[in-house]
Image (cartoon, rainbow, N blue to C red):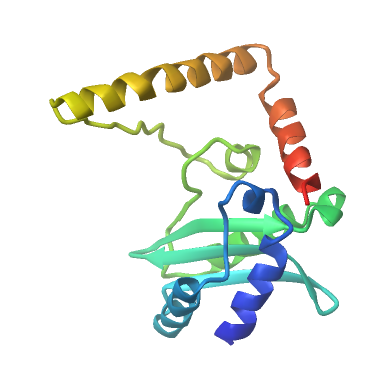
Length: 179
């Protein structure tokens, strides 16, 4: 039932750190329409882990030409010690392996530890941005470049000192504690 699915995804999503960032799943008319259409056509799959009648974690996925794309995930931070997202990911992967129409699982962008742990192949990709050769394009690039450069230097420093995961965990915990 797409109504129950969207409602359950929203119940989990509202307590995730992704919501504090303005990312992740959100119950909107657009998401409801996409869920309905995707479920009808077999384009999306959603996995929800329940404790009793309460949803505690989810993975939202899409399928296309033999590939399962992991789109969104979230879990109730109150269950963090039990690792419900990883448990549910194991069920997602189990289903993907058993499905003869799927040959690839695409974890999406980023370098989360679970992606390194559960994948056997990876490809580094780079995002390229092209600016128009106009005054406005040059100005936009001039404002953007120092910000991205500082972020890149900070990330390299954290990676070199092996503090990336610690900072990431503290940042997520801080976002989870926000009202």
